[in-house]
Image (cartoon, rainbow, N blue to C red; front, side):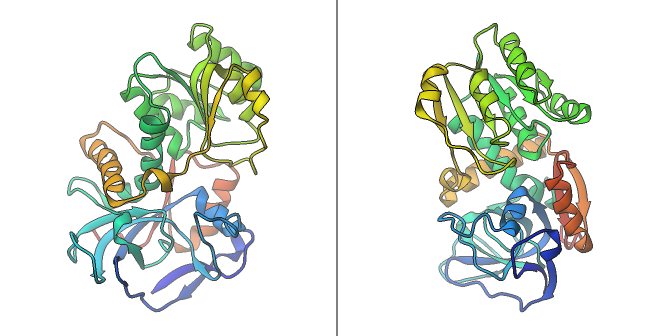
Length: 333
């Protein structure tokens, strides 16, 4: 099979095409013939070596990149129930999706409904599940809440805005360009501004009648974390779920105290989709919304095998708006 692998950590140039044996599923695993793969910043982090010492995302070289995909079940290992060869399926947070086939733990896999295309399933699994748990379980958004969504034009940001609005919250989004702010507004944000600290704080006060926001969702990290803290109301919640601008800084407890007895959390999808029931329930909420047209995922760019380096560069340089996907075998439907 074709696969895009790395044998060393580094820039986009370390991503190399290889012909590998088709893997066989072991106990508790299924093999998926892949139609589409999602392209995520987590792939960039993997390529750079961020997860070398991670307890959550074990990394050993060489490895096939890609942590999200959709296709059809091609083979089923022992001790797997509930799946049949030919079932349409999607997964995330299991490596190997930049390839023709991937072996995935069956509990990480969710069924794709007939009314949803596989490219949308691949584009929405990782970011959709992330946005779902952030809005419903971490932020616990409800009518009357006001939230700040940094990187509102990104894949997670746009879905998070939509979930927040469905839950009745008011949303202030940030993005770096006029086009990106327009994308956040199109996703449903009530207001959008750039990342300038003073402008964000002024917008947060204006949209919350002077109180500050209830929840700040921050995937940017060092470049925005002080702004997030200052935008929060007393007893507000800072949710740092990513660090795309670099390693996150230490936050002194007294900084949170002095800013209004704030709460802080650094959640991971792995803990909010830790079993088959949670994974399938969150995926169903995302897929049903997409199929019904009540949720939208914007596929920004479609890449072929020779476009992986450019796809990663576009992510690193913040040129992507919405989601990028890798076309592997679009004849699979």
